[in-house]
Image (cartoon, rainbow, N blue to C red; front, side):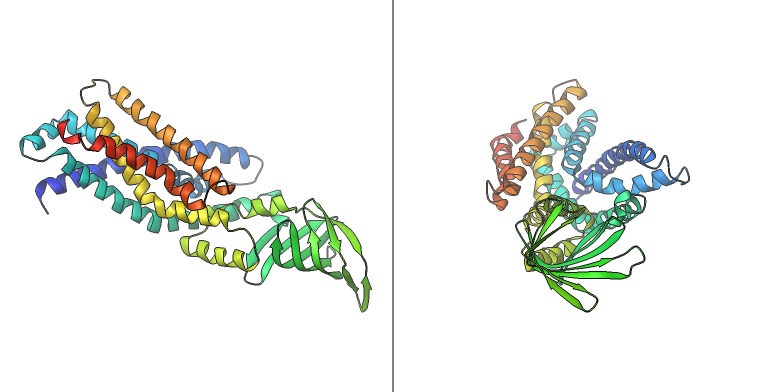
Length: 357
């Protein structure tokens, strides 16, 4: 490996670790404050909120990686400018475009490692975090999971426990449902079987139910039961996809399809993960263009402010397209890749003259 190549990669990786450490520390500090508030009435030791915060911080920082790579690149060039390394490289015949190629390639490889290794670690830690929070939450009486046997729910209401199994969901209806009701001692009270249940509200409408009590069977046209679940709450329970690894996301997507449940959020999450290495690389190129075009500015704060302005702008542009894709206004693929295509066009326009800077 050529000396300048090793030198540039080494400086870039050191810059990345520095920025990552600073951002990660800030995230932990801010998260600890909320965890202290959550556990203030619980019998836990003083270190416990910090431990829980550490588990959650890797997930919180994941969405900040574009911002981290932008700052990393700016910090990298600030170090080179301060030591006049750019001029030395230029006199040695190393073009700006070559430097950009080296750090962009490094960034892309880091991006692949992040979505494979770091994301798997992050999802596992998030899963542990959710389990801990669930143990201290009043919502731990209620549970909903999706398996290849359909949708399963545990509901607790009026000192009754209900175990609900539905083969699939069709809009706001549960299809082919079996509800088993137990008393607080977990003795079976009755079973309710129905082809269709309306769960739009927390008062469920059970159509043509067959009610089994001991050895007796009763059929009615319609009955109503109260529940802690409605369609919206069931959707929200499955919205925390960050606790699932890539393999688990793919498995969950298959389970969702089997019960006719919307896979939009999972598809969006998977496409976002696939796009991240390119997203990080484009942010690195953008930061490089900003730094080359502002290298004569004496104020480092101004350079960073310009970078942050574009970072925030792109963040909101991404979220705008994600919402459009999530609500079905535009194709899901377009919602993920259109902002990156716009960023690519902007980068291409300015990168052509980067050797002149």
